[in-house]
Length: 205
Image (cartoon, rainbow, N blue to C red; front, side, top):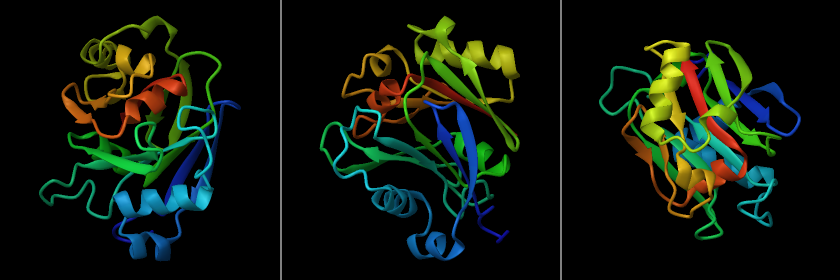
């Protein structure tokens, strides 16, 4: 492990319900400096140029940077990278709060989410473990209400990233919300998350 990276990514297949641990190539991480650069490179290498942005072939990359989770100013930020349903190109949207730092503290540099869940699902990242949970009871909830509901289940120190009704309905303006009021609001990333029936990602660390 370097001082800036855990050198570990999780590939989460929502269709199969599986999680695979993949090494993060340190040379690539350093060359593209994490965050937007690394997330874009991952998607480029995955060959998503011809996929439907709201189809099962698109992917969501939740990625941190080398400073994420450190005492440095603005180091809580993370990036969401995907093929945008608005532009048809690879796009990245960033957000603040503590979700990115929690993900890093849980031992992950990033999550690569692919496929489509059979039912509405949320993910729990509990330190090094990632598990799948039904989110059917949360469908239709506004983001702030779901944040509160999931923290009642998983503890007040949990950090919740989720979509509201706009994301569920794949509205192209839909944002991804974390920590109640922080938003990754560009490029329709919330619509892509909704297309995968992924309602939330909860991180405990």
